[in-house]
Image (cartoon, rainbow, N blue to C red; front, side):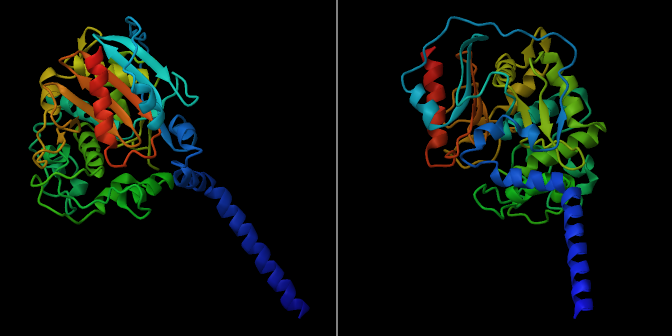
Length: 387
């Protein structure tokens, strides 16, 4: 009996040592998984959205060595009466309003600060769209009607085989992908756990085999489409997205603070939703687009791409919100009215005719409630009309 007890003790001790060793070995992955599981918790969400680099693998997007392109301030403006209530209801953390290229309103809420680099979520998609427009103009990408497999051969035999770059830009790939953030087992949440545990997004994407429609036939918002655009961009250039974005867009714009991307375990940028920068710097990007892609005395994004990418071109249902090349077009939009939009209340809203740009960061846990998106657009329009 004593011998048995001794052996049992040794076995338990060995198991304990092994568990501790595995825990130490996987400590970072476990920490990131815990961060994912509490990312949107009511008592953590605001802080988390301003400090993604403390929980996830990241890579910087160099702002270069050039000077900051100053944003001038115009006359301070009182916004419409309903804005204060909207800010509180929607858990807005940063709001910058520009008119005629000048900041006329800037404020930060819920104990956040101007220098906070906030997660863009799907606003990130519009930055990649801009980069693709530049590469198309430079000839690195020959045509939007090229199949994605031409630049990303790993997609052969997957659900993306047969889709063109244009199909994917339009979110009309036809690929089956569950985007429900409230469903723990949805594809979008499984993808988040892949990022947290150091997996590879390329492998996750090439595992997708099912389609609900043929490419180009039907619009459905599928975030993984944007990762495919990242694969195409990397394949066309042989370079990483952070390096390209830095050279082509970020450094020429003279940002105040260096942005960064959340990455997967191989260091591949989470291009569909992992860009982080200040609210003022999001406003710069919107202002550059409002000016037809021109900024700081330089044509950064081709003007024809700005115009083409922000027009409704996806096969959305009549009467619904429109979609271009990774940009949203509000229902009933005026010419030159469009926006970048991300979950939990991230926006870059552009009203070209009124020379207005509005950049918003939020931690809005109720962003999916009926009517919220429409009420946000109504607030933006009210602000633009009041200036």
